[in-house]
Amino acid sequence: MDNEAKLRPLYLTKILYEKTDEEHFLTTAQLMHILEEQYGIKSHRQTIKADIELLKQFGMEIEEVKSTQNRYNLLERRFDVPELKLLIDAVESSKFITASKSKELVDKLSTLASEHASAKLKRNVSCEGRVKSGNEEIFLIVDAINEAINANKKISFQYFQYDVRKQQKLKRNGEPYTITPLHLVWNGDYYYMVGVYDYKQHIGSFRIDRIAKRPVLLDEEGTPAPEGFDINEHINTAFRMFNSDRAEVELICDNDVMDSIIDRFGKDVTTYANDMTSFRAVVDIAVSNVFYSWVFAFEGKVKIKAPQEIKEKYIIILKTAIDSE
Image 1 (tube, one colour):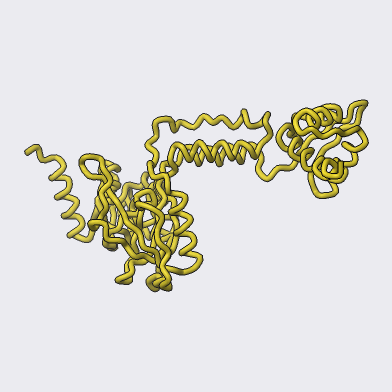
Image 2: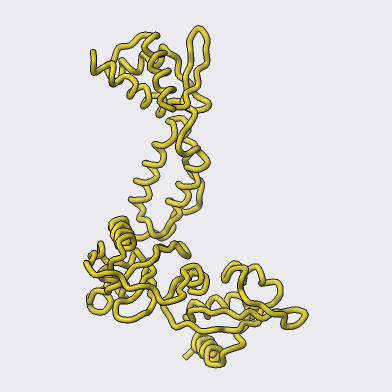
């Protein structure tokens, strides 16, 4: 009996959490029935009322509706239903989380709502058929990187790419990379680690789902970031986080693409009037093929003015793409 008395408030909490919400109540009789039917604990009206009062003193926001059959429900939760919907949308639409892990996380998130509300968490996000990562170790990888960032330690890991047979092939013939991780970045549907290469003061970006397995945490202290390094500027000026040389590039842009320029580079981007229909944008960016494809997508509304070597490289890429031979 002593154990039953101690366990009863805990089971009442569980019942109220799972089976009630703002719109759904349980009467005293229903609470007594569930306690006995599911947990083998007998109770009576006065003990239920006393336990509810105890839980309210503990800080639980339990509403009591007095009548011939008092009704109770749990109001306060850590997440409300709209917040859970948003989190579930993020998990289901994320490309770096595997399909099996997505399902597991959604199931766990659904338990944070009542049984009645969990039905509302069935989402309508159009992500069926979306390409998802196949790297099941991704959470272990992220955990190791976070540990290294917090401890300011270097990590060692292998990195892979897919060959023409769609098989994973380790880059650098399997020789590990040694990196000081600085930040984890979610960019363009992928999760990246941004860090400093061990052998030089050079920033690199690595897709988390391309890291072969959990990195090894080294004893060596981390290499500091280059002086003046700003992660937000790096994200805004690196196209899909590609590692490439940086350069100051001048663009000629039609006036109606200003929204796109700000979306890409931020409101502090340097711009000047060019003529009545266009403006100049001066940006410090990582120049890569992804940058050139971004320019091409504007169908002439964004043009490269300088430097000349970057402009010429773009012309070569365009000519190569249309060469029929």
